[in-house]
Length: 390
Image (cartoon, rainbow, N blue to C red; front, side, top):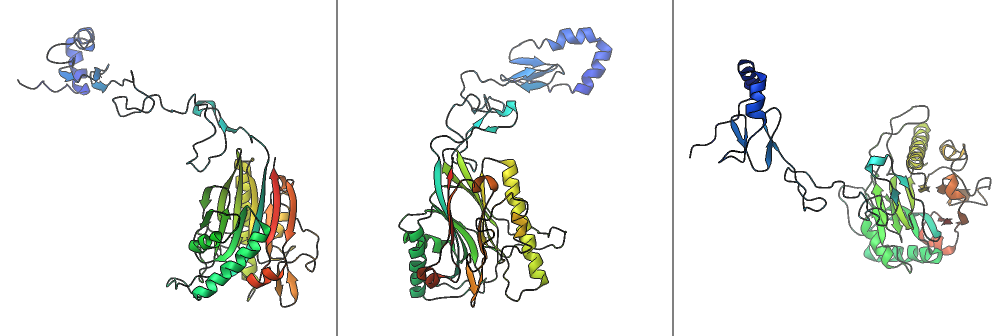
C-alpha cells in the first residue's frame, strides 16, 4: 500500500483557497471526514488516532485524561489534573521539602500562600552558642593549614566539650572553630541528650576552622553564604566572610520554625582599620540576611549567633541593636559582669545569641556559662538562652 500523501503546508493552502474559493475549501477540508484507511484526513494528509485536524489543517495531539489519575500522562506529554495539590486537605507541606512543617492555605490559583499559624501546644527550646577553640581532628588536611593532634587529644577534647554541653542540656547548639562534620558526629555520640541533626559546611578559613550546628529538631534547610560579597554600611568593600555565615532552618514542630545564622567574624588579632571594617561588613550582611527571613516569613523565629569578635557598643555589634529590632539580653552590663572571653585579665563579651524582637519576647532564661569545666574545654564561655514559641 502506498503511504498517504504529506499534508499541504499552510502557506500552500492559502494559495489553494484563492483559486478554489474559501467556501469550497471549508466544505472539502475543514470537516476532516473519516475515510479508510485514515483515522482522520486533514487537508491532503492523514492524522493519527490520538490527533485531531485543526482549523489550519494541521494534525494536533488530542489530550485525554479519561480514567487516568492525577499526574498520569494525558497522551500528549502533560500530566492529568495538575497541580495534584488542589483539594488536598493533608497536614502541612511535604516533609521532604525545605519548607516542611508549616501548613499553608490556598492553591496556586488564589494568590500567595498564607501561613496557617502554629498548631498544638507551645514549644520550648534551649539554644547554646560556643566557640570551642581549635576543635581539630587527628588527620592532616593538605588543603588547609590545620593543626593535627593525637587521637588521644581528640578524645579528651570531645569528652570535655560534652561535659559542658550535657550540663546545659540544650536542644540546639551552634559552634565555632570545628574542623569537620565527623567531629560533630563524635561529639554527639558523647551527649546525654542526643542532637542527631547536624551540619558543617567547610568555609573560607585557611586553618580549616568552621561554624556548625547540632539540633534535636530536624533541619529543614542549611545554606552557605561564604562566597557572597559584603560591604560596610557606607559602601566600603568588597569583603567576604572570614569563615561563613551558616544559615540553618529548624523544624520545631507544630508548624513552628526557627532560623539560625551562625557566624565567626574576623579576629581582633593584629587588629587594624581594615579588619574593623570587615567586621562591620560581616555584621551588616548577617543583619540583612536576618531581615530578609523576617520580611519574607514573619512567623519564623530568627536568632543570629556566634563569635562576633567585638564587644557590645562597637561599630559592628551596634548594627544589630541600635534600632531595637534585635535584642541583646545583657545590654548595659559591664564586661566584668558579663563576659565570654578574657585577654589576659581583661574581660570581653565577644559571643552572642541575638534574637529578633518577637523571639526575644519568648525568652525564659539567658545565661553566660562560667565554670572550671568550661575553662578546661575552651578559651571562650558558652552563651545560652531558653525560649517558648507560643
